[in-house]
Length: 385
Image 1 (cartoon, one colour):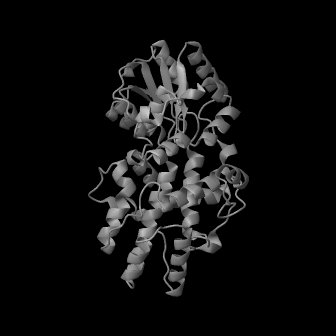
Image 2: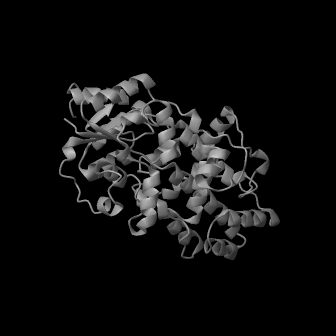
Image 3: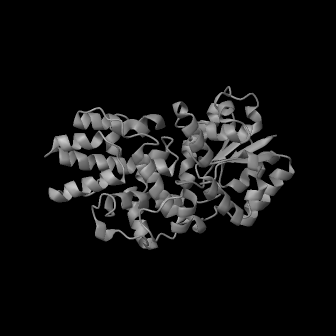
C-alpha cells in the first residue's frame, strides 16, 4: 500500500498543449518582433488566432519532432526548451555574420545576451543588409555524434558549439543566464497575459496586449472523475502531493478552478517557484529541475523542510516502495529512479499511446491510459510490471 503519491501536473492532470504553444510563441517573438531580433517584424502580433499559433508551433517544433527529441532527453521545462531552440537560431545568425565579420560575432558572444544586445544585433543585420531565415529543421543535426547527450550537457552545449564555430571561449549559454531569463520572461508574458504578468513578475511586458493562456487549460479526463479519484485516494489515508515544473500560480489557479487542488496536502505541493528559489540560494547545486529529484524530494519531505535538508538527503530513500510518483515524461521516471520510488507513467503526454513502448523499455512500474486508472493500482487490480 502506498502511503504517499506525488503527481506531475502537465501530461497527468492538464494538457501540455497550451504550454507548448507558449514555448513556440516565445521563440517566434524573440526572433521576429522589432523589440528583439526583428527578423520579420511585420509578421509579429500579440493576438495570433488558433490557426496562426498552430502554424508557428509546427514550424518551431518541426511538427513536434524537436519537442519529442528534447523530452526524451529529460528536458521537461518549457523555459529550457524556449532557451535552447532560440539559442540554436541565434548561433546560426552569428555564423552567417562571421562569414563577413568574424570579430563581430566573437565580440557579441563575449557579453551578456539580453534584449538590448539582440536589438543591437538587429541593427547590425539591417546595416549590412543581411537576411536570415530560421533553420529549425537543422536543430537536431547540431547534435550529430552527441545523440546520447543528457540534460545537464544540453543546457550548456551551445557554449561548446560556439567555441567550435567561432574560436572563442564562451560562457553566455547556460541555465539562469541573461538569455535564459529573457526567454522565461517572454514565456510568462504569453502564458499569464499582461495584467497578471505585471502583478506576478513586477515588471512591464516587452510587448503589451497579450491575453494569456492560464485560463484556457484543458483537463486530460473528466474533471469530476479526476476529483472523485483524488478524494478516494485521500480517504484511504494516502498523502497526495505535486511535483511540477509549473510556477506556484500556474499550478494553484487551474487546479483550484477544476476542483482538484483541495485534495492535495499543501505542504507537499512543490512547483518551479520553490525550485528556482533553491537554485538561487544554492547555485552550486543548480540546475535542480527534473530529471533531478529535488522537486519530488521536497514534496516527500515537505515544503516546511529546508532546502539544505532536501539536498543532503541520502538516496535512494529507505521507504521508496511506499512512495509512488506519477508522471508523463522520462524526466519524471529518472527522478523517481534516483529516489528509489515506484513510478507510474500516464499516456496522456505529448506522444500519447506511442509513449508506451518507451516506458516499457525503461521499466516503468505501471503504465496508465490516464490518471484515473491509479485507483486500480491502489486497489491491487493493476499489478506492478
